[in-house]
Length: 400
Image (cartoon, rainbow, N blue to C red; front, side, top):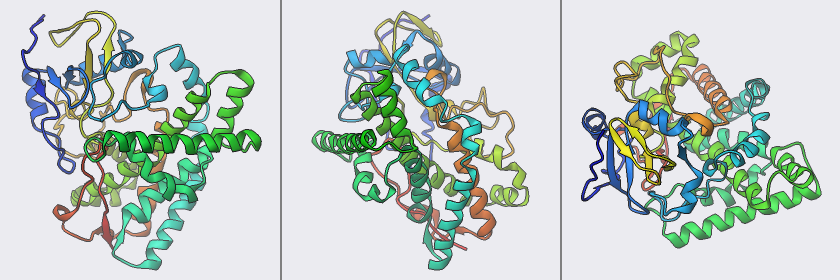
């Protein structure tokens, strides 16, 4: 076991994320230095973890805590620590909040949303056809498709999206916003959610925000701050994360025409295709939230001492050759695919069943209605959002 500490931690991230490329340095680190001491732009130094096996340990082992981040200057890429709500808790607080949401995101209940999703997909494609090619699949399909779903579920008026959408960037901005801008937009979004909760308290509806307010008021299960931050996290995940995953997945399919043709000829492959897209797309540019060791733990021969933090690099774990054969190849027939696209352990994404269904319905409907759909410009000319933790195209022009 190594206890050696680097005299000067390596600067992280190693470079700007380029399109959907995964930095080749991760493969070298997995082989030679799977646990590396790094210094991020903000917060304390940390251990960067790059292998799949170590990733499952730090995400699933109770010896690693998310809640302890609140007691430290968390290693991070954002100017301010992010209000992570349930994602920043350990049991029993985490259990208390997750129990409230678990019944909403069961596979059975999510499947009941399929007609609503299919109807929305067809409505948006009707709009694309009426407009004619080329059309932007980001603003013309992915954003309204994902946004409508999560807004309906939560009870957020979709027509308010022009007000709140810009505020969502404050939660994943790394270099494109100042500390003051992040703080101001965070306060605006929290204020907007708080107003919605006040209106639901006066006039409840059949939506998740109303259910959360009722649980808080009648059962004293959530504080007002917990309510606001939890609803905010759900809105961000359902709106920005899903729309980015969808448009990035379309980009991958367009740039792998052989795989796309296979999917069109064998639509029964869609479930495995969705899983492969979730693995292959490095949606998080670099690392997810830090975990803190509550006792000394060995990871790949390196001792992580109690109180030290580790940073999980999910894009690296999903390309680990010891788990995924030909890990850098996009293969929609891949059968063994235990990817970490939704995380792992107690913080595994609650909305995974819904995200999977959204992906399936969106892709199935798009390629059924527009079988000749393809990128309208050279892929290398497309522009990507800079300075954000979530990778996403600014637009995806398509023709058919």
